[in-house]
Image 1 (cartoon, rainbow, N blue to C red):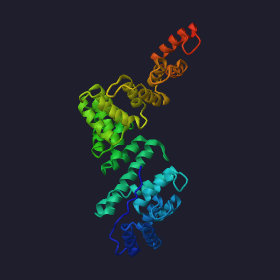
Image 2: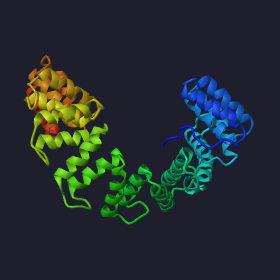
Image 3: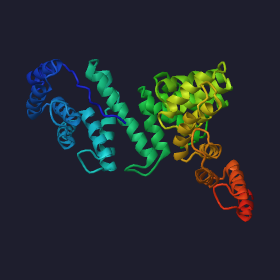
Length: 383
């Protein structure tokens, strides 16, 4: 969820403090924010709701002044009390997130609803830049109300009520609301589960660049949910999400290049996408990179590099990486041979029920590698 921090622009000739606001905007154009906020404060003290909102926003992000959430809340409250929708929305956010105030979901909901109640009227009644900002604010408030009903924040959890608010926001083009409606249809939350309907809403959000919706479209095409299975279409959507930094999508694009699903098989391209996902901490990508360096797939074989990636994945609890790391210590590949260290990693994987690790532990006890020979324990791990 995001606050509205764009400076609004309105015809101000007849507004209280109009001259100060014009001077403030002129100072902003020169990037003289210290002067700008003083001008906006002067207008705000004279009761101008827009100026009060701007001072709140500048205090919120520390522009022209030291960032001060409590000060931002003070100015948002002044503006919101006059019915300024964007200030009401931001005040709701501050209460929801506990910034400058004690976190209070019920108070947050109150302000979101006041902002949302102004609906499309602001957008349709004013074609100025501010009109567009207000429309966005109301759509965002509707989205946040939906989110709070979905998650039971300040209200009793109510999926049907959540869907109502998401749809109001989605109708104004809010991509996050469109995505969440898709999720609710995909999982049957407050509605009958419907993959085709989920697909429809994911498409709307994805068309606006929502990377989670793009990822989900890739998943649905890849698995034939609500649509005919199509690997090429899956790759298309995964790639769009991956290019925005979605690590799950990056991993999946890597997989599809590795296996040749929907694209020409290309290990080097797979490595490229795995590295992007692995850099974000994706344990599966880290493990797969370990395997590719171990086997020389798409890269020059490099046991030390394989160990590096296995360790990163294994440290996050990936059982297959723990097994593979144990194997590297057993064989002395990329590390000094160390049966005791191998045992450590095999045990961690075995505790997760990994069959290969259970078998290897049994063999280590049988032959006394890294531990005292113990046929009873060997049998126990094997069975």
